[in-house]
Length: 277
Image (cartoon, rainbow, N blue to C red; front, top):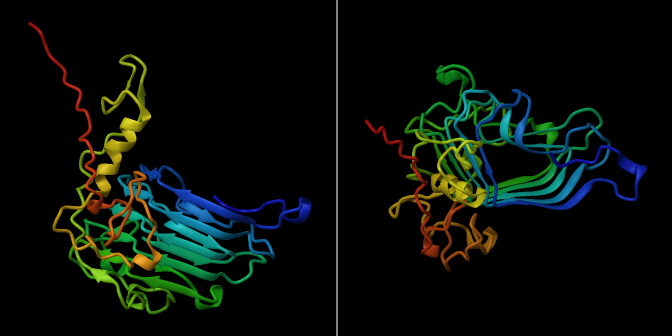
């Protein structure tokens, strides 16, 4: 959560120059009113956050618990959300984003989304039922935002139509360079939670370090070599590196992982149990 709760009590008004980079978010256990990442929260009469960059993160929908949306903005300006990968059956009231204001918030301004992957392989993009009429991609009232931009993102709803609500300002159809196609990401069928096992002195997936756990999870951001995200980023808005910190290729990929970097992600260690008779 990026915000400024004490307002003018100190010399700074509004959190600014904040970067959220190269993280893995997974296994949502919060409430249906919260997000993986949220800018703004307290309904203040100033921009609670500005000059915020969110890039090269992986967000996994491997939990059955409902969240508000993967990313949220309340009363902020100059927010960039780029080259992130959101993958899986992420039960949420809005799959991709919610941009709104509360209390005395100013209207959001200059909120930009570039080169992201939003991929629900289950074809639901929905919170608590399989009713397609409840599918929801984003939540934004026109009165809550002054300016925004969607450019060169990939959208996939398991072959079903990406939901579009005519009552919402931000929809995938606003993205004139958007791609609707399967990004060819690994299915979230064997996600091992990174819990430390005291008896074995290893994490649950067999890793001996948090770095190894991180690498094991990043594999869910790795597309196939024939994925439509390869070489398809808008280079003008893409970061120079990827989720592993590797330099991106000249023709950059959409999403958090740069396949063109030539770097492979090791497969996770699978603990083997032997029964000796």
